[in-house]
Length: 123
Length: 167
Image (cartoon, rainbow over all chains, first blue to last red; front, side, top):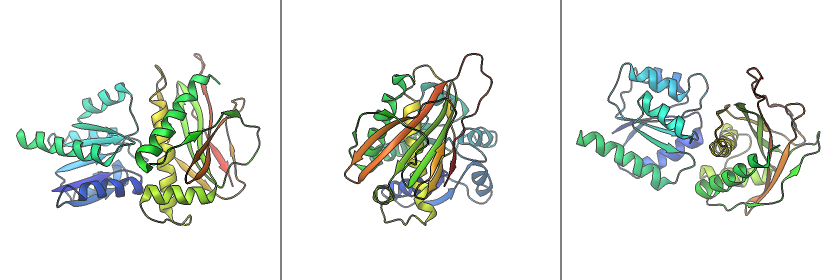
């Protein structure tokens, strides 16, 4: 399983990495913003992406919209402090498959990753 | 400032610290800050723009910040490491983001965080916006949340929130 973590906070990427390590064998790549993620995608094709919203250079929503013009299937979980209902709807319309509001417990993130991947396998 | 804007920050800081750090936060009586006075040694700063503008600061004495960051990051982190500022920035990001989510019927955007490290620094804020200080105490030490925000007047243009800091 190949995962791309897109978050401008290294601390947050480390926490996500630690949660993912409990779920099995993973190859993890990291990007510090949407622009960095776009460049990483030329050499790394993930099976799942965890994407923050508020980031410098290219925010998560813009990244998702740009990515979805080329790839409609790779699942994306938005992991963000943006908790308003209108923001969640905006993200889902842009092509996000699942949503986790920061702060989160390791169990919650783990559960969202597992359910996102299960839906993909069932499809 | 409308007191309804203070309780979201109290709820949010308690939620962030209990969820991510397993650290209960005891909140004291909020008070108006007399400017200009220095904050603590380490400040995470976030700007708000949209229907509500201004700044939010999480400010820690260095020893508290070192303890809080080590719990959050899961390892000892020196204040000289970029990871230290990263962790403080992510904490103020989560506290501000959580609070703005509790504002009723307001469209608010938050900036990416800035972090200032150094004893005696002062944070310059929007003029004529009172700053409310919310004292917080944890087992890792004391810190404060400084909230200086206002509702954007209906006829106001696009005003970005600015939080300039000088060390």
